[in-house]
Amino acid sequence: ETGVTQSPTHLIKTRGQQVTLRCSSQSGHNTVSWYQQALGQGPQFIFQYYREEENGRGNFPPRFSGLQFPNYSSELNVNALELDDSALYLCASSLGLAESGYEQYFGPGTRLTVT
Amino acid sequence: TQLLEQSPQFLSIQEGENLTVYCNSSSVFSSLQWYRQEPGEGPVLLVTVVTGGEVKKLKRLTFQFGDARKDSSLHITAAQPGDTGLYLCAGAYNFNKFYFGSGTKLNVKP
Image 1 (tube, rainbow over the protein chains, first blue to last red):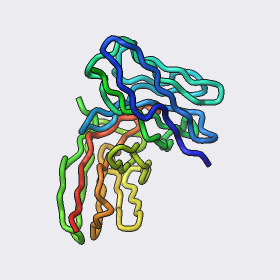
Image 2 (cartoon, rainbow over the protein chains, first blue to last red):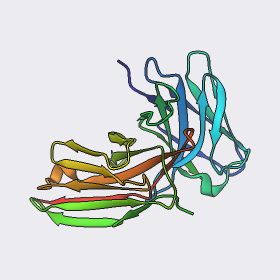
Image 3 (tube, helix red, strand yellow):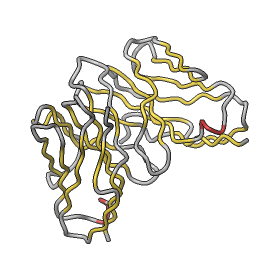
């Protein structure tokens, strides 16, 4: 069973640029969530995709957008990068939405630095 | 505003000591998870608790979900250096949003 993978591992961008981060879900998982983790803090929920539809969003501006593909892999796009966007971006996949207690499995993350 | 508050933020103890980490909220969660994260890696799931009052044990780790499903604790017995890491609690809210606490950084000295 393949785990959650993310690419690239590290990325350096300039303020104002756009970036796309990629995530490949664990086999059989149809739900993916994206998180931003600033240094020394817990992950902050960005949004979740279930069967290619956005299904929940945290307090992030519209310049953070995403996609989920038919094979359940996913992309996170961030436009007009700001210095505060520098963080570890994590994606997590799960078997699906459950009434309570679905379990998420995280990838290793993409470290984004904005200069 | 942090929906989940964890305490303590930092903990440095000697090998063999016991410790408890707390996760508190004013909100009710449908489920709560505990993760451990090492530097440069994603969080790794330790346990999921769903029912109020539930207690789960994982070797030397004991997890408890509060009766009202607003708080949880993680107790480690006889800590070992391999337990060192960032411990995170996370709650499922409205079934489709997940909130993490700020974490407890544990250092176990040999």
